[in-house]
Amino acid sequence: MNPTLSFLASLALALSSAFAAPKPNVVVIFCDDLGYGDLGCYGSPVIRTPNLDRMAAEGLRFTDFYSAAEVCTPSRAALLTGRYPIRSGMCGNRRVLFPNSKGGLPASEVTIAEALKGAGYATAHVGKWHLGIHEGSRPLDQGFEHSFGLPYSNDMDARADLPKGSVDSPTPPHDGWNVALHRDGKVVEQPADQTTLTQRYTEEVVKFIGEKKGGPFFIYLAHTFPHVPMFASPAFKGKSRAGIYGDAVEELDWSVGEVLAALKKNGIAENTLVFFTSDNGPWLIMGDQGGSAGLLREGKGSTWEGGMRVPGIAWMPGRIKPGVTSELAHMMDLFPTALALAGTPLPKDVTLDGTDLAPLLFESKPLPARPFFYYRSDQLFACRVGEWKAHFQTQSGWSQPKAEPHDPPLLFHLGRDAAEKRNVAAQHPDVLARITEAVTAHKAGVVPGSPQLR
Ligand code: MG
Image (cartoon, rainbow, N blue to C red; front, side, top):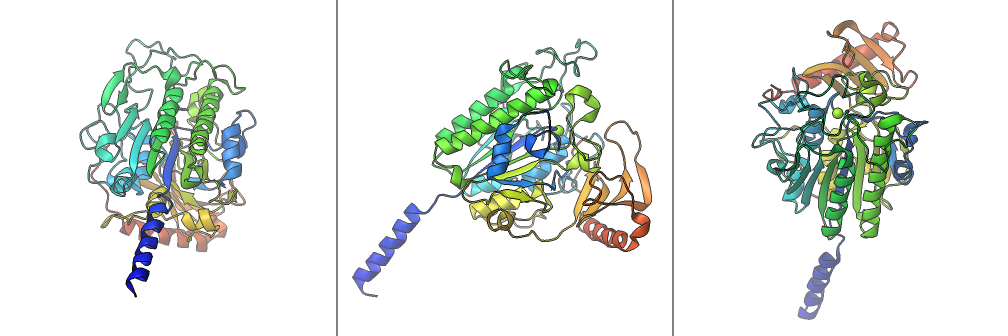
């Protein structure tokens, strides 16, 4: 090539990389104990969620999106690592981490934040953590450059003199819990004023978006609500037909509207994947302060569908074709999806359990068929293959002290019987055999991590 052409070619290359679209931003909005039936776009007749309904109308709404666990800590570990919690040891007897727990997310685990930080992303955690308070497990130890929120659930660290029944009272005392608000690992308010948490988390995220609009960035917005005890700010309190629970969810909906508006205002909505979901199903034993799983059976704490199937909405205007999908997807898919968007390779020598959702999100292609495993604590309770789900054990979320084993397993067709009412195991021994095979293959590939929930 002559020198002039060669110069022009290298100039063109330099210009194209200078003006190439920046890497896409990723925002995960994660609610706590929000049920499958608690949003307008998932059929709630009483809770108003216009912003989430619009997000769903502009994006892709999943009918069959799953949490990787039936309770909080394991679910969060799975989301951030892309792995079933059994692999990281973030599940077990105590079900979740407590303030006096010794363990936490092992430093050896690679989180989405660590992987994206390595790819040049600014990273922020805003909201509930619940993956450990000891060195190695905290947000700043796990790839987040900024952190603002609570170290664990808002009902932990209750005041010793809290009157009985306060937790599920419709107007719990504001100062009944001693849980502290942290910024970058330091206490900034104790007890945290829970009535304004959703507002303050939102302001924090909107500010971060404004500061980092040049991108790329990763935001993990893990809301404290609608986890009991329920609080809403004065602007939302007493406004919903569904009581204080509805107030809290309507405020979360407002928050989603603010975050999406901030992305639009800064001109980066088309280059930002926002994924909205919940850590597990509704906490049904909490009565008026527990949500609804809609037509699904049971709720938080159980491996019936209501415990683990949760709302899932993906939004990236202009990139994601609006619609509704019944493809089976789960929160462990967000790890490989985020890394694929960032154009960064998956970590070496790490067993991942998710798949990149990009072909579904951006090209409406079906996902590869794969089984889904429902764990309660460190026990595999159920498995779904296609429309079929087999239960090897069942247990109510809270009110049944012991698991009930099933041999042969219970079998339900989730298309014809989404509520899991009609066991058809006797009619389909071939299906049970296929599912049992999938479980055997999965178990052979699981090396349990050292138990952390002690
Ligand atoms: Mg939860």
